[in-house]
Amino acid sequence: MFKTSASSSVRFMVHRQAGCLLAAACMGISGCIEYKVEKTPRPDTVHLEVRHEVHGTSHSTVVDGDLWYVTQGNHLVVLDQETGRKISELDLMPAGRSGPAVDMLVEPTMMYVVLQDSGVVALDRTDARRPWIESTWDAETLGIEPRHVDPGRFGPIVSGIGGAIQLPDLKRLIDHDGEVTSVVELENDGLYTMGRRVYRLNDDAYVGSASSLACFPSSPNGESSTALGSVLPRETLLFIRNERSGGLGGFAHMEEGILREVDSTRSTEALPGGVNCIRVENDRVLIAGPRSVHLFRIESDGALKELWSTELMGIREVDFMGEDDIVVVGEFGQACFRTDKQVNSERFRRASPGGLLQAVSDGRTIRATSHDGIWEYRIGDEANLSSARFTTYPEPPRSVALLGWEVTIAADGSHAVVRNEIGQDIMPAPVGSHFTTVAAGDGAFWLGHVEGIMMLRPPSSMPMLPVGWDEMTVDEQRAAGYSPLQGIQKLSVQVDGPVIFIEPLELGGGIGYAAANGGFGVVRESW
Image 1 (cartoon, rainbow, N blue to C red):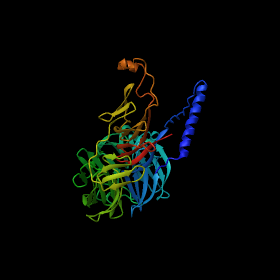
Image 2: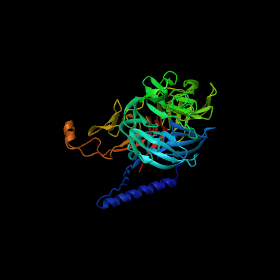
Image 3: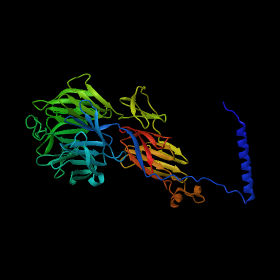
Image 4: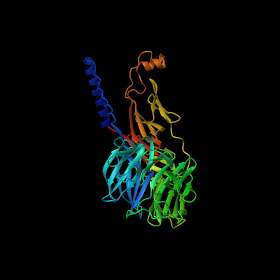
């Protein structure tokens, strides 16, 4: 309950009289000087920062002894193979500064991780439970946009868009504009794949068809698999060949200068949707596609006999874990299965928000759908699977307006049209990418695309336009030297996309996002 006191009335009267005296004094001079507190100009944004991440898709995995290595985003995670418990985690690159870690090669004392189109990180495994970064080569140093790594006689072979090089001396092995997807070294020569074609390394001659090739792994004592030279030709390779209708995985070898399948009817397997990964351990073979994984045994006549299989959406890679278990990673996170059980074979799973499809937000929480259910991300905090019913969310916005500016994404996502009082111009999407959604907040536009997020901040003031601007033709306006993009600031961060949703944040600025493979996170400006 409020009370009106005499003292408060007196204070009001005194203040009013003081104000009148001050006004009279000012009038007695030559007039009042109006005082205004000057607004501090907004500092220029130096760069964007990913301030928080909940990682999504796991791209690559290798089991070595009692350790389970997994890549997720630009992180390397070391897990205990018995429990799936996280032992250690390492940032391979600052958040937002590289593509995801998509491939890795583990050697006895070193390991190499490929950051898609960004670089390669070499890690020392003296302490295999907590590897540490020894060297990093960026894409400019490599001379290619790296995507794959294979073992080589004289060091790891890194391949990707632009060719292939050998570490650590960066020797150029292949120089090509396209994407080299694998390189294998044989006794007398080598082979590499590009598209669905196989070429000889020494003269680039076409020798067969495959999407990727790999050598049989050596056992810990350095010997080759027992199947080689007995039931299979001595230099048998593992091959994957993907086509529109599906994929094939199996064994191939060089015969009279041509790469041929060992036995297309008994030692080659077909999977709908394609083949992502093939692994061999002794007489066991794992072949995985995006929707299932299958375990085979190499019979005495070289045929593949299926022993076990399971279905799981979003598989990226698989590996063996002991005699009876396998590990599987992908959009769902990481999982371990027993292959001696046909039902209830999943031992454990570390779920993560990958394979996100659609998203909405109430300003505090981003809710996204996936094949595993509904994920809820409390912005800046953690993400959890929800019991909410699956529903269809509205399409993400592709056009927004802010303070006399408008940004509209083209139908094919190749560019965005920027409009303001000067006119309109085109902002192209990053090379090899396309825009997916746009949002506006805190005086800036935020465009999501396949590989990350771009911020466009309009200038604080527009230029003075000449008299009669509105009557000028478009050609006359262009000739005058004014551009709708004049003074605009453009900054970007990389996210394992595509980015499917952006939510501007009122508190603290920046945005929260959901990305198909990158999970959830927060991006803010840094001054």
